[in-house]
Length: 209
Image 1 (cartoon, rainbow, N blue to C red):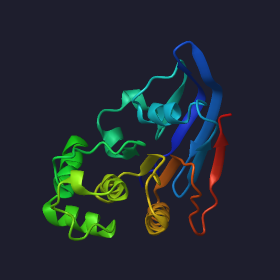
Image 2 (image 1 turned 30 degrees about the horizontal axis):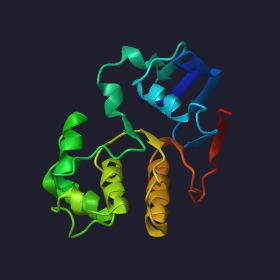
Image 3 (image 1 turned 60 degrees about the vertical axis):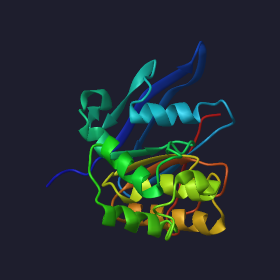
């Protein structure tokens, strides 16, 4: 039986320029667990999340996935991880549907039109799937970006300010989606300036300040 994946951080230190953001950071995150990274602006929250993805290198320490340094993995690690930054990273001239399918392709897997439409409708974008993203509201654009969570098979969600520009209904939907992900054995780590509570889940807090 295959062992469930675990994210491990060991004695991590990161810098921005010549400034040490944090050091000696260690924790582990397993299936069904949710962690919120807290800290004042400039404390290194986004840097930590990007380091967990392998997009940035720490000055000290290691990030392990299933017991192996993430730098030793091939693209299979990124297939098991979905990162959403505080920017939407979508193209204005493309439709919501085209953006979603393109994102899947860049992540190394294919999504057919039916799957993409289903994900967008789950995010409340019915009848907007074929519209250019540039005509959508900021909240709708954020929903397009968040729909990526529904089209992959990632165990680990890394979310930087996922609630940005969302109304109350969309915040509730995100909390529901995270809850479903955790109940299916997934895990998530996130930052937010807005309250995010998942029913039946105790959120672990990691404070960088």
